[in-house]
Length: 231
Image (tube, rainbow, N blue to C red; front, top):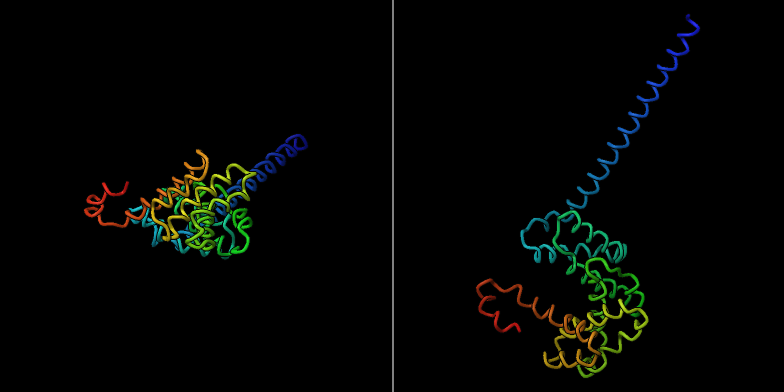
């Protein structure tokens, strides 16, 4: 009887022991993952806490810009875009598009003599804003007022083999034309009209976006008074 029962008892004890060990391992792993996530999130929050929760998405994004430009310089545009997009997914930020513009400019500054390398560093996270910001920086920095309107579009020909990047580039041209502050608004519109119909739309949207944003910092009452002048 002892010979029949004892092995079974040993087996039950071993099975229970194994289950306990597995439970401990799973619990330990779960606790580690939880605290790792908490630490990483807490670290990020500590660095950008002063910017989040301001109640104004535009001001929050502006506050975060130096942080993400620093990440771009120290690591990469791709890494910075990933972190910015994560804030949107977590619900901490409404949009990372404005931030991605600045990431693009930081990438362009890091590769001032090589636009293709700067654009390769960008991704389409945050509505492709990195491409827009990078092209804007090159357009601002690379053309005099005499050639800006006539030659800005030539910059994008290097990307004609990739339709998505080409359209992003043309949109960035629109940003750059406005940011240069060297051309009258009518001249900027004329420069965009030099593209074909689809590219005109991309260029013009790149013009109208910063043109409209110029009014966002106005006090509300002043903005209401200026609304009819924007368009």
